[in-house]
Image 1 (tube, rainbow, N blue to C red):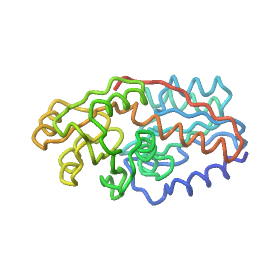
Image 2: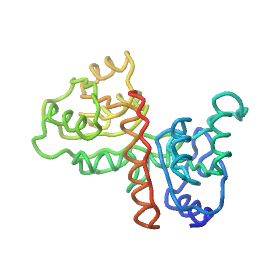
Image 3: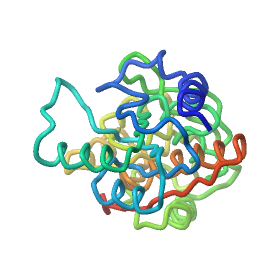
Length: 250
């Protein structure tokens, strides 16, 4: 498949141009034109980029790309990552907030489906766009079995702050680093909030707002969208797509 056709499809499908982000999104490093195999990972980390090259991939798809904020020099860690891509003649495509927000393959929409939450609406604005979802839990769902389901699904050990009802009704989901949204979740009537990272102060935010919070891990909550996007591309274009798993435990 031609790289330009694949990039154009991804840009349109993910609506990349409609999202302001923390760095440039879409095609970040240009490699060879012909794409016969796709690899993906959550992060554009050196082990993943090397594994992609060893797998013979010339198109690597990530959630967390190389470039953030102000222009960066291609030295040190960043330089090694870029050299690895260039030596392999590989393309790197990054999609951050647009993947969080996507209604089909987005991290939050996929998590909601897998957890059995009926999505009602979007919430949680980042850089001007709504990226999270909230919805209704199955009738009679208790908090402890819900946490167990999160752990089973994501293969981790989520930390649960049980400050809300034992039987949950309204669940909010924002993957990654969105624990600062606890109070906003409570104001929406969300009684159980699933997100990634936590810090010391978030315990008291949850306690004082009176809601349950499941801190399931930044990496773990953002695997699902990358996987789903890869499966979508494999089905649409018939290309082999391989997810490369490099968990951070965070």
